[in-house]
Image (tube, rainbow, N blue to C red; front, side, top):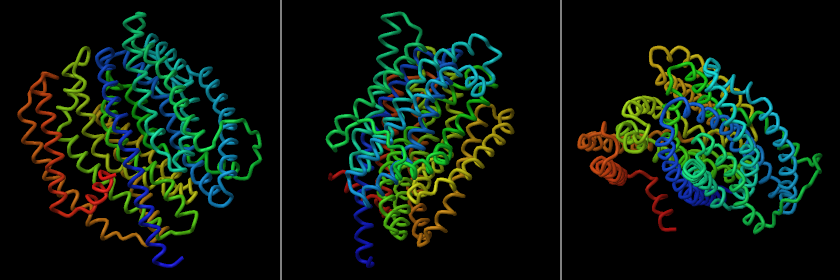
Length: 527
């Protein structure tokens, strides 16, 4: 392949990544906004106590399995294999692979779901060992977990068919699916709790289970439009399925290290005072906002493009795509980190301080948010770097490095949880993610070569400078609010002014400093 063709192909893939990231980011933004409404409603009904701790631990279990099996392993193993099959054998064979993979996954997921329901008490005892001393909390957590366990069955199938749609250039339906989870949970807690007098925890748990089915049904029309019908195919000896299987197990662990580390934090938090699990949950939800809109969206958009470049042996193009994706993520996540750190108490106060969520809960959640946000750059970068390894069909390297990160997280959490309480657990997660990203990044740039590190660092420096100026603006603006009072019209107006003004200041500074990402954003907005 000539240099000109390579450059044109890389430019084409960058445009595809930008366009796909724009689509996924738009729908993910709506999902995160509806998710905030969901968390606000949950905070009003549950607050931060025994009931909320039980629900959040119960919800964490299927959520972790979703990341392990769905967003982590299935996507990482299926997408590169599916794209390779499409390129080498044609669409008909690709559709055949999709049908076989769905059939096989249904069988495996049914077994996992059944075993999960049977052994829920043992799982809860491992996930939240501190709950065992409180029989009421332990029993409630078991019941809620069993109700929600079918969610992993449906959402894993959603991830599989979403990978097929993304590989075929269809990003909207998979990105929009999580909105249904938020709508279902909001409706569940409002309708079931008020009309049928169910407890908030039970209402939410049933809503989660139903949402999994709704998200799967949403994908069906789009699959049919691509000629993919979910018909059983039991040809489990199909060679591409075997290749997919070899990628699956290491990807299940390596691709979900962030959630594993958060889970470690949950386990240790169960040993701390009541409310610690909830404070970490609410803080994690706020960090998930920029992480989902930018990092996960861009990672989902980049994987098919990276897989195409890797399948054709174009390591120079892959290197450019990795650099482009990391710089684009940094353009959003660095200012988001500054904004979350400076405005952590105003954001928590306005969003959550209602009903049973008190001013003390605001302070404690803000404390955890500070240390989670310090690692946002690493959480975000990990998504791209890990996807690059997956595109190379290397799931073992992320696996081993992520296992090391889990050990670091556990050790740091044990050391920091006494002096810093739940804030120490958040910091331990950040330390582990930073080490995980830096090690994987160094290994990756050595493997693919041609990585222009000087241009990359120059871009990060410009983004950091613009973010710092925005941070000074936010420090001045936040003084106009009285955040201990929670939400009121003045605090809401000040927070909105901070957010909109901060975006404006950052945009102007980025333009003046000639941040290259402004061109990509203009291109997305024009479309």
